Image (cartoon, rainbow over all chains, first blue to last red; front, side, top):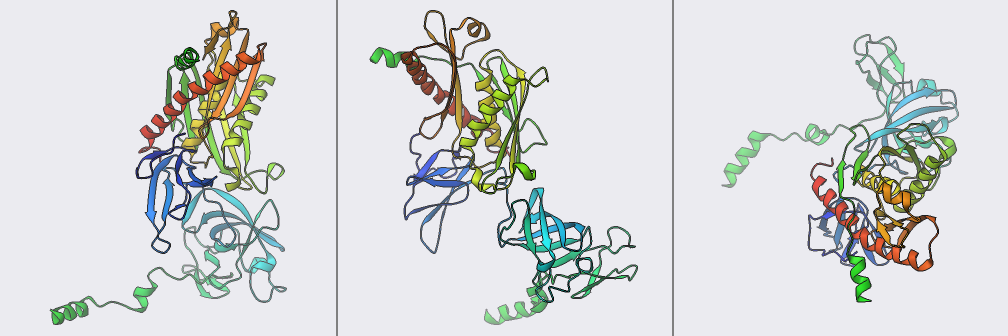
Length: 222
Length: 221
C-alpha cells in the first residue's frame, strides 16, 4: 500500500491502510495500531486527527460508524443484573461498562468475600442481593478464565435498583440505610447492600444558582 | 520482460457487486457476487463463549459454512478451515480475550471461484462488523487450461476442463501471500507466474473494498 497523506482528515480508511509515521508528532489513538514505525488503521471508518494540548502531539484515530465492542477491563465500573444468589457467591450478567451499553451481556461472579469491605466472615449474600437486582460493581483482576470477577466493597457500589418481593413490578425500593431498602407502596423493608449513588445534578443541588442575582450583578458591572 | 509485464497488467476479473448490512440482526453482514457466483456472510461478536473453547489471551474464531443443499460434508469442513485460518491472520483477536467471533457463510450460487468469493465476502462482513483488523485480504482464483494458459477467475466450464486450479489470498498491507491452496499438477514456473498475476489482480479487489467502504461510510451504523 502507498503511504497515505496525513493531511487528508475526514477521509475513509480501511483496515491495514498506512496512515502516518509513528514519532513524537503522531501518536496512535483508538481504531489504529502501531507496526514497524508506522500507524495503521484497524477499523473501517473516517480518519480523525486531534492535537493533544499537553504533549502537543497529534492523536491519529479512526472513527468507525459501527460502535467498537467494549470489553470489561480490570478496574472498570460496571452495571449488572443479579441472576443467581447462593451462600458462597452471586452470579450476575454485565449489562454496561461505564457509560457504554453492551450489545450482549457477559457472565460475572461476585464472591462472598468481595461483597463488603468489613465483616467479611459474617456476610450473608441473601441479605445483600436478590435475583433481579441492578447493581454497580468494580471489575477485579482475573483469577479464573471463565468468569469476570466483581467487587462491591465500596460505599458507591452495591444495589441501585431493586423490587420488593410482594411489590408490583416496576416499583423500585428506596434506600433507607446502608443495609436496608423500603418499598414506597407496600412499605416492606428488605435487606440489601445499598450503593450510595451520587446524583448527576449534585452541584446544582448543593450550590443553587440564582438567576435574578446574576442579572443584578451584570447590570451593576455594566 | 516488458512483454511479460504487459501480460500481467492485461487482465479482467469477474464483475463484483456487494451489499453491506444485508442482515438486520447480525453485527456485520455482506452479500457479494463475483460474476454469477454469490455468497452471503454474517459476523456476530465478540460474544460470550462456552468454557471449553475459551482462550484467555485472545478471541476464538468460529466459522460455519452452509452449503446450498444444507447437508454438511467433508468439503464444507475444509472450506471452514481455510476461511477460519485466513480470518485469524487478519483479526486483532488479542483485543477481545475470552470471547468468540462467529462467521456464518451461506452458499447462494456457485458458478466457479466459490472459495475466493467466500473469503472476500467474509472479509467485507468483518469490515462491516467493526471488529479490529490488522489488514483486509483479497482472494483471487485462477486455473491452468490444457494449453498451459493461466485463466484468472475461471468460469464453471473452464474449471471442468482445467488441468489445475490455484487460489491465492493476499493482505492489503504489503501484498504478501496469506493463504494458498491448489489442486492438480503444474510446474514451479507456472505457479510463480500465476502468483504474480493474482497479486496484480488483487489490486482490483482492494480498490473495490475501498469503494464499498466509501459508499457505506455514511450508512454503516
